[in-house]
Length: 220
Image (cartoon, rainbow, N blue to C red; front, side, top):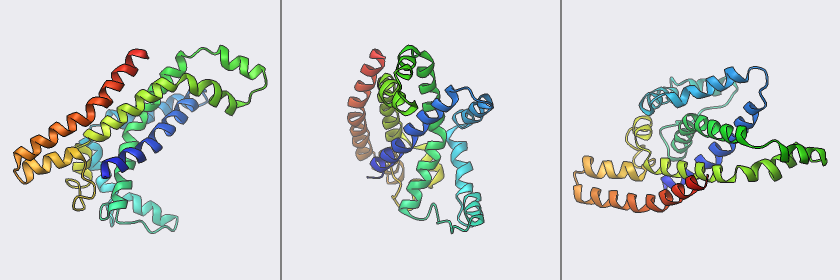
């Protein structure tokens, strides 16, 4: 259940944000190069380092997140003490590290697009939004599908980030993914046979997505 919620929330946040940032950087406005460099920093950090940084930031008493919310008059929740706050926390951390990859991939696709169709649409009177939805977005359809499948697989196998941020899928099993369940079953309860069966189930779940990803990659 948590994995499906994490996947949906991650896709809703990460893909549109990555596309929007790619479009913004593609305009090559003042300060774009510095902005792009800053966005790439999270992607260069290891999940363990990211998890430790955000775990301290989400601390209910001493964390900078609740401190910043308090400045604007918002009482911050106990991020890692409840199911929904923990889900939001993991989504924020995962998005912070994943959005740069989506942004760079979409930006590379935008640079490779022909400017002719967009210029022709502009001459015909299409505005910026019409050009994006009817010209640019259809041209990015395959790369967006590829990114969606990559993010689904990443969400399914996510382990180290959740292990560090939420202390092995806590509170309780509220943030336990399938990969975390395999680990806890095998190394926490020493039920190796059940853990092996769960591992096979994970492979079965990933295989169709992986096949679609390879097919989309070949077409791309």
